[in-house]
Image (cartoon, rainbow, N blue to C red; front, side, top):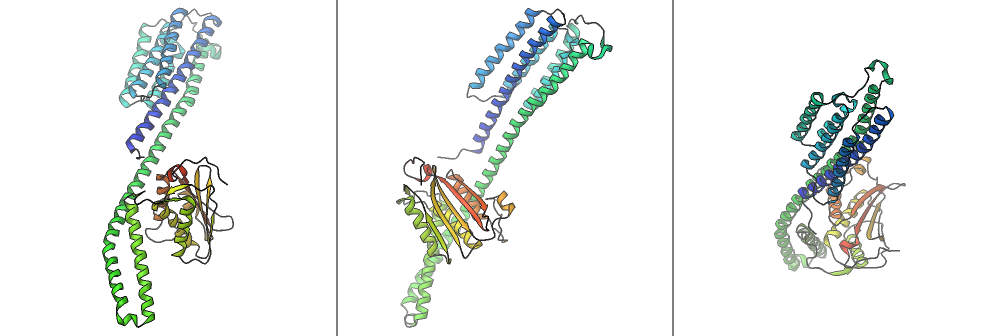
Length: 438
C-alpha cells in the first residue's frame, strides 16, 4: 500500500483537531445554557428581581437548537473550517448579548463573559476572525450601554459581598477563570497534540528522504562496482589456469580465496541493487518463516567469524512467506552491529508473539548509552565514534516501520545489549495467522 503524503496526513490531523475544538465549544455552550437557567432562576425567584422570562427562555431554546445542530455537524466527515468555528463564536456572542439586553444591559455583572469569547477566538481562529470577534464584542458592549435597560438594583456597592451586584461580579469572575482554565487548557492540549504529530510527521519525511538519497548513492556505487568486480573475476580465472600459479599450491589457494571474496562482493552488490529498487518480490522464491530465518542465520554465520553464535528458532506453527532480501539485510545489519560490540558471543532468537514475528538479538558488549536508547534509530548516532556511524540501525528502524513493524532496544541486566524486531505477519506471511504461538 502506498504511503500517504505529508500534506494528506497533515490535513487529517487538522480536521481531527478542528472537530475536537468544535466539540469543546458545544460542551461549553451546554454549560452556558445550564448556568443561565440557574442564574435566571436565582435572580428572578431568589432575589425577586423581575426578568422577562419568556424572552430569555426563547433565547435559551435557540442556543439549545444550535447546539443540537452542532452535534449533528460534528458527526459528519467533512473538515471543520475556520468559518464554522467563527460562526459558532458569533452565535455565542449574539446569545450572550440578547440575554444581557433582557437583563440589565451593560449594568449586568455578567457582561465580562465577553472576554471568554474573545480569548477563545484568539486561540481557535485565524487573525481576521479574531479581530472580527473583538469588534463584535466591543460593538455589542457599546450597544448594551446605549440601548439596554438597567436592572432595578439598589446603589449598594459599598456593602461588599452583601451587594447583589458585587455577588454577580464575583460569580462572573469565578466562571471566567474556571472556564478559561478548563476549556482553554483542553483546546491548547488539542493544538499541542496536533503540532507534536505534525513535527513527528516532518521528522519521518526527512528520514525517508534521507533513505532515498542513500539508496540512490548505494545504487550508483553498486553499478559502478559491477564492472571492476567482473574484470577481477575474469583476471583471477585466467591466473588460475596459468602455469606460474597452477604449479604453486599456496598461490593457487590464495587465488581461490580471492575468487571467493570477489563472488561475495558481487553478491553484496547484487543485494544492494535489489534493495535500492525496493524490489520486494523480484524473482520471488516461496519459502516458510522457519526456513527463511534458518537460511538467514546460516548464511550470516558462514561469512562471519564468531566463536559462539547461539541460534534459537522457536517459530511454531510455521507459515509460508516470500523470501525478502530487505528483511534479510535488516536482520544481518543488526547481527553485524552486535558482532562489532561483542566479537565472542551473540544470540539470535526467533518466535511468534501474537500476530507478529519477533526476532531478538543479544550480545555481551558494553551495551547502549542512555543517549542512544533515548534516540534509538536516529542517523549518525553511534557508539563506534567513526564518521557516518549509526546509519545501520537507522536503516533497520525505517525498514521495519515501512513494513508496519517496530524496533526496540534495551540493555541486559548482566551486561550487553538487546535489540528486538517485531514484524506483523500480515506484511510478510502469505496467509493470515490466528495469532497463537508457542
